[in-house]
Every structure is written in C-alpha cells, then in structure tokens.
Image: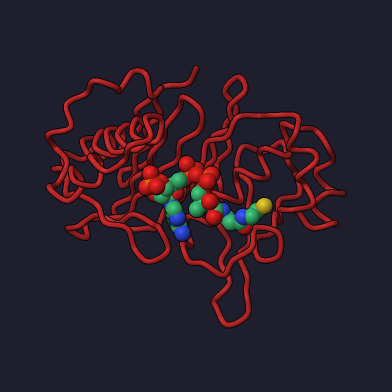
Length: 209
Ligand SMILES: CC(C)(COP(=O)(O)OP(=O)(O)OC[C@H]1O[C@@H](n2cnc3c(N)ncnc32)[C@H](O)[C@@H]1OP(=O)(O)O)[C@@H](O)C(=O)NCCC(=O)NCCS
C-alpha cells in the first residue's frame, strides 16, 4: 500500500502513510491546545486518525524545515497553521492518512477506498451529464468523488454542493490531472487542477498547482 513523503514543487509537499506506522510516534510537537483536543477524543479509531494526520502534516512541513506551528480549525472545519506560514489539507480513510502543504496557495487532498457501493450513490454527487460522461465503473466514480472532495477542501467554505457547484470539466478521464470548476452564485468561479493517483484499491486526489 502507498506510503510516501514527496516534494511536489519548490513550494509544496505531500505525505501519505499507513496509520499503523504512525501509532506510537511521540506527539510532543503538538501545541498545548492540540494536546488538549487529542486527550478529549475518546473514540480509539478517531484518536489514531487525528494523531496520524498531525504526524504526516509535521512531516510535510519538515520538507521545508518549518517547525510545527500548531493548527486551528476555522468555522468551516478547515485547518490553518497558527503562524500563517502557508496552507494545509488532510484526509483519512480506513488505515490511511494523507496531508498536503503549500507555502502560498490553498490546497486540498482526499483519500478514498474504491468500493462497488459507490455506484448507488453516484446521483448524490454527480450531475446527469457527469454520470453520462463517467459511466458506472466504481474506480472512475471514486476518482470523481475524491477529486470533488479535494476541490471542496481547497475552497473550504460551506454552501457548496459537490453535485451542483463542483463540475468535472475534464474531457479525457484517462489523464492523471482532471480540471474541476467550482461555481456558485455570488462567488468568483475557480478551475482547480486535481492530480489523481490510483494505488491498489485507493484513490488519492490532490491540488496540483
Ligand atoms: C468536510 C469533508 C470534505 C470531509 O471529507 P471526508 O471524506 O468526510 O473526510 P476526510 O478524512 O477526507 O477529511 C477530513 C478532514 O477534512 C478537513 N476539513 C473539514 N472541513 C473542511 C472544510 N470545510 N474545508 C477544508 N477541509 C475541511 C479537516 O481537516 C478534517 O480532518 P480533521 O477533522 O482530522 O481535522 C466532507 O465531510 C464534506 O463535507 N464533503 C462535501 C459535502 C457534500 O457535498 N456532501 C454530500 C455529497 S453526497
């Protein structure tokens, strides 16, 4: 299964790891407030996920020799570094965690496992045109779902529906980067290039600036 620490550009880094590899890691680097948050997560799996996400975020920052600043969540649930030293995004799925960091631009990341049941959910996150374009292959549908989640996280605000406001405008779905357009009344439209990787039964999607 996928594990990596990768500098994507002079300004950005990506880390993916198995949660089991990170359990037992020292959490001394966390801020005082984060240690409190962690001690209040009683659900064992959630505790491990939260902890592992901060470890991979720290590893991404270490690619730029940036000391861990501590993170806070805004009103929409998106994490930001305390010292305003860039942008981060994290994602977890069963057994896996991923983080992306960029010094200047907002980022989004998502990891999902490919599951056949996604076919039944397609109409919840895809428009009719998108369903016609993508078809019913669970791998392609998971790529669509995951890339939309990554785009959603880049924008980061509520009031955006995956189905109605984030559109896959990519014609050739065999390309490793898909363009997604976010548009909604009253906001500037954005086109987000999302890199999509497949690793066994896992889809990894992230902003590629
Ligand atoms: C917020 C959301 C993107 C999280 O995605 P997920 O697949 O459930 O979970 P992931 O593990 O990938 O991501 C969780 C992380 O997302 C981050 N996150 C939460 N809200 C966020 C937001 N508004 N913007 C950016 N990142 C956010 C958090 O860091 C969170 O991790 P943490 O709680 O450990 O800090 C998702 O729940 C969501 O709201 N999706 C879009 C809404 C939608 O249209 N859903 C209906 C489609 S059927």
